[in-house]
Image (cartoon, rainbow, N blue to C red):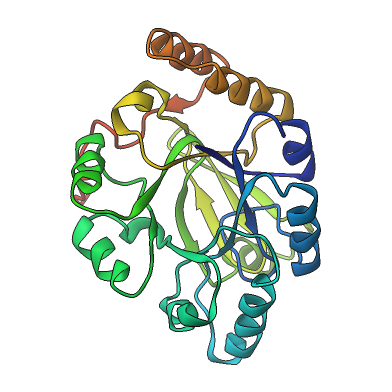
Length: 279
């Protein structure tokens, strides 16, 4: 199944026949996205797109004084026709028995092994969103050793880190630079990294991830296409190509998508993560 993380409402309505579900990011409690929606908007989208599998992302670290608000949101979502909630903060698991939808362990860089995935499954968590930081073979190994349904990124910019601090805006304030934007770009060593500073700071990869080549090798329960910073026309084209994929044309579609951008890569699909100190 294909899920999308929309960058704007138009990506939802213009591509309605080209995806199976949505990941919606809720105001104040979602990170690594520009397009956030209110609880009321989620309810409305659930009504308008009731034939889609809708997941809601609540993936920031939760403060103590936010717990009552989080509980209220989770209970209100019981009234919606949603499939599940993506969580990072484990406090959300404590509400599992009160929920009539599933939970998705989506702790970004930590979802890297089947033992921890299976641990959370003991608490009723039936979905996990695989980290972008591991290889194809490691993902396949996880799939073989868990009954939990997996989410895997298929296309789009990916998050490198998130910080509670306003890293960019603190810099602008320090030097009295007037800039009301929430989206910025860091140029370093010939690469350009998108950065959101909106209630938190999130830095994204220089390149756009394209995992289409492994479409039939990994085969998770859900593939995710992220519309962040992708032109709406191009995003529609990509979803259309994916919708027509088969075992005979998968390489062609992979190459066709690559030709649409000049900053495509395959992330860590074929390269193990190695941390080392620069000289």
